[in-house]
Image (cartoon, rainbow, N blue to C red; front, top):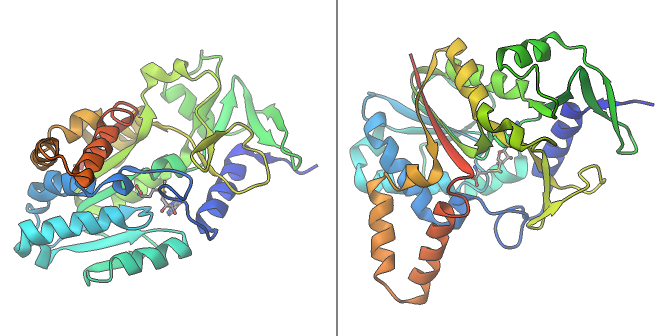
Length: 321
Ligand SMILES: C[S@@+](CC[C@H](N)C(=O)[O-])C[C@H]1O[C@@H](n2cnc3c(N)ncnc32)[C@H](O)[C@@H]1O
């Protein structure tokens, strides 16, 4: 019987899901993300990052996992309109592993000649950003001194934990006494290292759903979840393609970031973050005064970003020092 570590199982499933054809995003797909809800999201990120990008003579943005390319489109449109001079100097790189999604991103972004697709993170001055990317990275699942494996029939099998990197992780994060499923995202740590290497100077912005160490016991069964057509799939071991993700442990990004010179400068809820950005508030206020169906619909989408997503989603900004 060939058992797979849960991490390897999850990596395969995530890759399978994103590289398969078929709609994944919005109403006809499996989930909504904030950039899919409304352009106000990408505009807010652009407004927030504008002064930071202006610190550099040749600024660049590297987006990790760009979906359909809507965040990039709204971000670039905003900068082009508000700061044409900065736009003229800006390069936007996309790091994406799904060929079908790259095709769609190329189409959506065809009017922006300053966008490039990369297989390795380039060395830049500027910002590496992502929305709902880290939750796709596979996790090891451990409980006490055992690690979770998956059988070819989709059964969970627990074997003795024999991985020093995981043991060190548990110690460093202070999770030794916890008798719950702990998700260990070594891939997140490797990605942090790549981000830090990519940034000659600049910032790392992560937006995702997640938790911090103080909240970990809220999830005794872990946070791994499967989604299909907007519904939670209880049995993630079914053979069908579905989106599998794990909430991001932001304490890990903050703690391990220090090893690579990524110092946390902001950590907050998506709601507090968005409502601190002038252009987001302006859009919210102007939509609230209108009564046409499109404005009413847009207002409700912005409220979704603030209410149902507002606390679950977190924003982390790190500065390379
Ligand atoms: C949940 S979607 C989010 C898309 C987009 N950022 C948004 O907010 O709409 C995750 C994205 O990350 C990409 N992705 C996931 N794992 C990846 C990996 N290991 N390397 C590169 N891209 C990855 C997926 O193909 C997809 O574009």
